[in-house]
Length: 440
Ligand SMILES: Cc1ncc(COP(=O)(O)O)c(C=O)c1O
Image (spheres, rainbow, N blue to C red):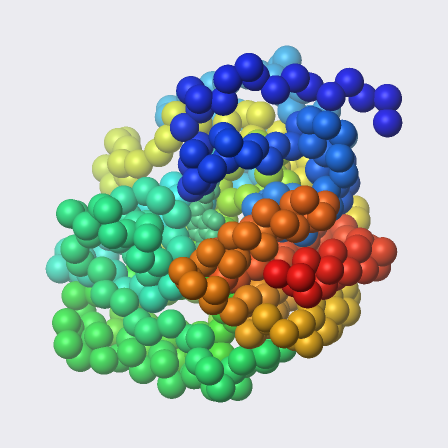
């Protein structure tokens, strides 16, 4: 390919890797040193197809020149300005462009640097909103089992995946969990499953138990992503919306994965026809090329908090040094151009049925125990072999060796390719999966 492969550092020890088995990795490293389009390349030059869009980020495919140029130019023009008391034009421009995609009414945008920060920001917005309205007693939150809401302390409290919580119990009070929606009768359902809308009654039960007037917000991923693709049962999100409205509770959709076309619509909100009050996003907003997250808020929430503040002082005591970083905004604007020019979201919607059929066809591999799918996201569960998660972990290693990159969670293999995937890539993904699943 004419590329000199970058060198790997002499020692792997100083780097403490996140969410990774450090000892195992360092004994048996699995690295990528470059990427292009649908593919990663290892330091040895081996090609590996990216079936997880990095980590649900790279919707437009890797190393887009438009984004690289925009970031380079931005860093030569204005590298940094404080986002408090100062701003730069691209922050306003990007916020405006984002609101062209968010559901109607969610037209105020607060920038963060990650999904985790977006979640904690949305929690603070909910608390500040209710306090401003004279309802400071609304301090409780409701989330759901099997949820992933990032790793900051607020998001960990909301989380419903036990390994992400168990070591950090102190300080996680004030969050109650609804049951998850993975029902045996929904096995191998394509798209939204038929059963489970009544699980939304859990929210009413929590309102009965703790007082709906004490709950600030309900956080859900419209379709759970990190756990392994759990699309919402038909009618489930509508019911949550109804109960929230009845009790004056804010509904928050955590769309860090489901946003930006992954569900075959701008956001899960539009895909499932339910509008939240706050919506978190990150990842594909910059194609993963720069760290950035955002919270889109209903104008009423912004107005309530902002108008209640002093005429001249700060209204919302929250923000990050790197909120709306110029390079991230430049990347985000370049990505907005790509979304528009390449009609990426329409393309995802058009590809989704074929993608879903192809992944579901893997159910005839004997170790596959379930396949779930929605939009351009799917999960294939492999049968537990001894320790839960061991076989899923082994599968992702063997897939890497076979030239396919994906994220596994426990025994679920998650497939969420870049939205620019073509038929030939889908064929490559499914044939590599089949090859490995048949021998596992
Ligand atoms: C729904 C959801 N919320 C929050 C996050 C956290 O995002 P980040 O890793 O950018 O902090 C993720 C990450 O996958 C996510 O899927």
